[in-house]
Image (cartoon, rainbow, N blue to C red):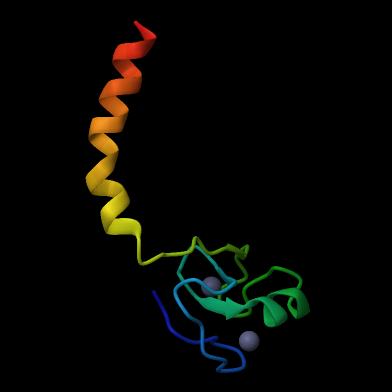
Length: 75
Ligand SMILES: [Zn+2]
Ligand SMILES: [Zn+2]
């Protein structure tokens, strides 16, 4: 994940609003709006970047047990 906007150089945290194109050019939300959701580097569509939270590791570790339980309950 890139840590700053490629247009204005604003710092982007893992959990801050940002947009990326399919080549992972990364822009802050202000620049994305200014560029009409089009990447100036490749002309591609800019989409909201998924946020990465610090709790992600714990959630993945806990998921399988919870998933199995809900699968069993459905049968
Ligand atoms: Zn920017
Ligand atoms: Zn691009």
